[in-house]
Length: 262
Image (cartoon, rainbow, N blue to C red; front, side, top):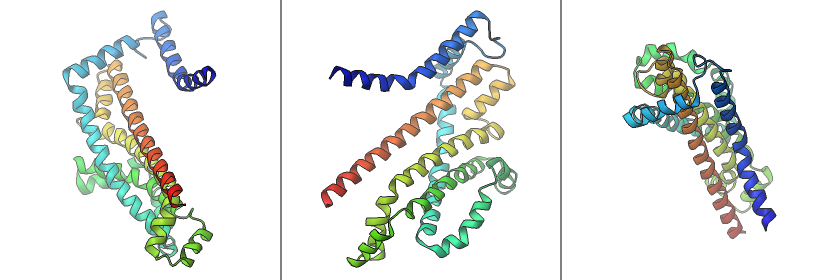
């Protein structure tokens, strides 16, 4: 029993060793003068700046603006990606028409699309929503396609023998098999959307966490830059963990349902 508890504690502590070690090295380097404050401010300065941002309300202002953009863009891109991936996954003809062009278009990075979208919608919020949606759409569509193709042909044939309609075959055979890959696509889509959000805000924004990074760089306030970077990483990590939790819950529920059905 004690060995099991120790192993569980060790597994939970292990992921913290590297970040804690890097933080200690950062603090030691700043204290000993190995790192110039003009290059990397001490952790104490960054913490003070982060506290000031939180106290003044600026942190919530910029974080909420970024979260709104990423949520709208991610939901729009994911919906389009799921629809496109489902169409290609269920129809070989749709795949032959759409996939080559889709693969060619997705090779163009988000910043490559910015001048064209800028001409169409201007520099306002629609620009950010469209570019974030494009970033999320790609992994969601490709993983949806892959997920729908993972269903065993033999299993689908059994469904046909039992008189399953096309709808029943998709909902009861294809979709349950595809769920893990669909969630992987959603997590990758969010990661791409979050990274694209920061890039877009670096270039064209007057508020948001990306703008905060640019503002700090322009004023050469590296403590502000580091504080914004920490918030970006923390928020992204928290949402990724939430998606991972949702994925595990759906997998557990699907396993329980499958067990009852069998």
